[in-house]
Amino acid sequence: MVNIICSNCNRVFAVHNYRARTAKFCSTHCYKEFRAKKAYEGKECAYCGKPFTVNRSTRNTRYCSLECLQNARRRYDHSDRICPQCGSVFSFNPGNARQIFCSNQCNILSRTHEADRDFFKTVDTEAKAYALGLMFSDGCIYSAGNRKYINFSSKDHELVETFRALLKSEHNIYQSRGSYSIVIGGQELYDDLRRWGLEERKSWEDYGIPKIPKELLRHFLRGIYDGDGCIFLSEIQGRYTYLHIALTCASPRFLREVKQVLEENSISCQKIRKDRANYRLQVGDQSSVKKMVEYLYRSSNYFLKRKRDVARRFYRGQI
Image (cartoon, rainbow, N blue to C red):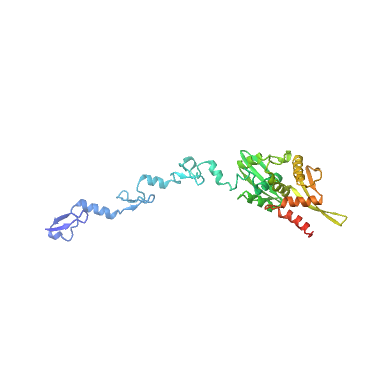
């Protein structure tokens, strides 16, 4: 008899000498078990990646369990999701398998361009006073359903670009019929501008100057001037050239208050006159025009370069 080590269970068993070279298993059970291991090696689950064993009936499967098979056959992942806008975790909704955001509000916010929506909360800087003047001249506020918007339009692209930069906005500037405009949505901006006295359809309203700090009034008026004002030259008998500044507005009350502010700064104005559907306030006295130019542009950082350059060239004798 010869002792042999079983190739499957490593147990020592005895066989006759004539079987010394051929005997490898201690029993039929070990023989079948060894053949099964050799024929059906372990696999890796195609869904979860875990290793698993197979047998003759499961040798063609790719998944370790029925759960992995069902998950793999699903078109959408049914696990909990994280909202990319607010970071909250929400469950899979079978009725809206493509849902990305936890709520409709987060969906809307994700498509909203960035802007400083608290910009007009307080008016305590030159930039805010100037932007408020621009809104009172060429801006408007309006509602569309439950949504609130502010709009600023001008024929000067530079002015719209300045307004967008002041509000730190990423909104696009649109061009239509020779005019440029920017529209920003936001309940906060809408409410704050209403609080400062701006109303929807302001062309039909009689409004006044907002109550902002007195030292910021000239920056506010510069915004009004850049939006609804003009600077022009006139000649008398072809010999003398004069510089004039005029403001146009739909509200006579507003122009009366502007006139009062200018006269408090020793700038004399002409009478407010009707100009088609609007009203017009003009400064024609040359000493007053010079004072107004100084009043508007002294230590200023925001202005429409085109209008400022007209006054600069005039007083340098280049016109």
